[in-house]
Structures are given as structure tokens and as C-alpha cells.
Length: 444
Image 1 (cartoon, rainbow, N blue to C red):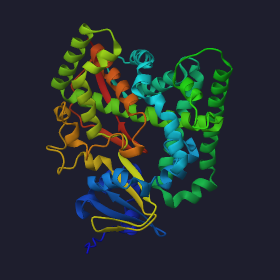
Image 2 (cartoon, rainbow, N blue to C red):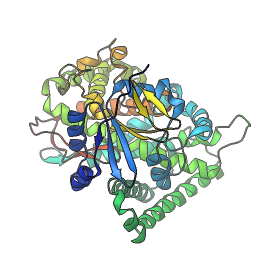
Image 3 (spheres, helix red, strand yellow):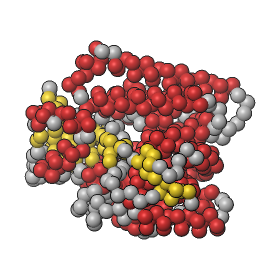
Image 4 (cartoon, one colour):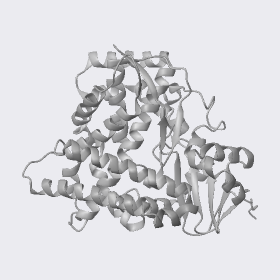
């Protein structure tokens, strides 16, 4: 007979008492509850609503891989996020998701991505020219523009104007901020609706859709072949030979903008701050980049040779995972190690906590890229989830890694990041973002 384990409860009163702190940064509140109650607890939000939080890596593996068919994405993504970005790979479920994944996956195969490396590198070089030396600058906006431009150039080549890009970027960021307010202040749902805040932001989304539809239609009417992601998506066919509808294509593009730029810009910012704090590691990265530049001019060979640079990024993603929570909802009642999980339970898995859990990582809060030396990937596979896991692992993980390695290589070969002693600050929104990321650079 399986011994039943009761999931510890955190009361609604405690939640409301800390509501203002949770709105600004919920992580200390969650960390305190994990410390008090163990690796899994249930937070009661009131009105019969609750969320199960877990930093149990075994539970994550069970929900995302071993029994993934019973764990769908929660309404946070299928409803709340979807109203701003549509129903694409990030927000779709069931047969619709499987159909889209099968259709789009080939566009993100490594062989296809190799064709985009030149565009990615060009976008990176252009944006890094905005770094000013000899003064403290907030590096996040530069990386944010870099990541957005990289997605734009990979999707549309050069067939999109600066005004359209700026508007799309503004809308993407504005709708995310609104969504954060909705999720962290569920008790204000009536006010957001009554005051017109939700409509204002869904109108923004409609504006973004209109811009993208215009770009798609211009491409369809063009005789030119760009061999970019948009061409690949337009040429993709379902099993019955049909192409994506215009609405579905726009949904997928909106999601690529949202998921494809904000996580990368945050990761690059955190990595730069860590390199500023650890000058000896920055020097080793510089020496590896210099050595590879002397050996080859082929971008792919260059990328593959930057093994230590890749380890630095992997360790940065461990300490500051942009996708710091993964949400799920179980379809049928389930049980994991004695814990009874009623059907329809909302679960949030804390990747941030798992990545720093002392049970899995020696000196878990220390920046140590050597953890990810060749041969160690299998050792950490059960408790390292920067891109998720299982069938719904991020489709753009290879794209993101190529982009980040190229960006760090260009940054460190061009500039030295001066020593910084101050702690790294975070801003947990839909993704984990940096705050006050001021660094000083000097030309090499």
C-alpha cells in the first residue's frame, strides 16, 4: 500500500499579507515557503483557487517526460498568454500542438539554422556598436534590441522597416507587463477588465497582427527567395499538403517574437554581469575566442570550437534561467511519491530553485562553468532545465545557443567588461529579467 503524503499548505491569509511583495518579486516568498515546507507546497489563493509549487526535480521529470500525456499547460499559457500572442507552439495543446510542432520542427533543425548564421552575426555586430566605452551603461536594453533584431532578421531578412520593428517590440513588451499584473494580482481581475486595461492591450496585439499580416502578404506577392524563417514557414506543409492559415502563421510569428527575444536578451545580460564579476573566466573566454578566430573564418567551425564559451553560457542559464518557472495542469487525478494530485491541479515547477538546489549542485550558488565540461551533460540532465524538457522542450533551443555564443564571442573579442563587485539584481516577470544591469566597457 502506498503511503499518502499530505502536501503542506500555505494559507490565503499569508498570500494576501505578502501580496505587495509578491507583485514586485515573488521569489523570496516562494523560497521561504520551500525552506519551511520542503520541496513541494500548495499556495491557496482564495475563492477555491490554489497552485502547487515544486522544486522536486523528480516531479518535474515525471510531469514533463515520464507521464507528460497527463500534464497539459495550465490556463496561464493556454488562456492568459494566448489572448496576447494567439494559439501557437507555446500556448497550444493536444492535437493542435502536435500538428504544429511536426510542421515547424524542420525549420529549426541545425542544418537549416546554419543558413541563418550570417544574418545572426550581422545583427549582433550592428547592435553591439551601440555600446559606449568609459561610462556605466545599462546593457540590457542593448541586448534586448540585439535579440529582437536577430529574430527579425532571421524571420524577415531585411524586408521590414525600423518603425515597424520598434512598434512590434513596444507591443511585445507592453503586453507582457500587463500579463504580469493580471497573474500576480488575480483579485484585481474585475478592475483590469472594467477599466479597459485588458482591452487596451489586446488592441495592441491586433495592431501587431496587422503589421505582421502586411509583411506576410508582401512576401507572398514577392518573387524573391530569402531562405529565412518566414520562407520556411510559408513553404511548410501539413500531412494533407495544406499550408498554415494566415492567422496560424501570425500566431507562430508573434510567439517567436515573444519567446525568441526576451529570454535571450536576459541570458546575455546575466552572462555579461557574471563575466564582469569573474575576470579570470572572462580572460579565458577571450583567449578561446582569439584562438578560434586565428584558426578559421568559417562560422560553423568557429561556433563548434567555442566549447568553454558554451560552458559559461550554460552555467549562466543554471544560475539565472530566463524560463524560471514551468507551468502544468494534470488532466486526470494522479499520484507522485505518495502525494495525491487532484485532477485539474495547477502546478508551477521552480526551475530557479532546482538549478540552485544543494542536493544536486556542489557550491550551488557559485559561478563555475567547469561543471559543464564535456562529458558532464548526462550527469546533470535530471535537474537542468533551461529550455524545458520532454516533447515540449523549447523548439528554438539550438537557435538561442548559437545566437548567444556568437554574441558573447563578438562582445568579448571587441570589449573588455570591467570588474564589477555589486550583486546581480533580478526582475521576475513572465521570464526572469535583469535589473540595473550597469556595466563599464573598454575597447580591446
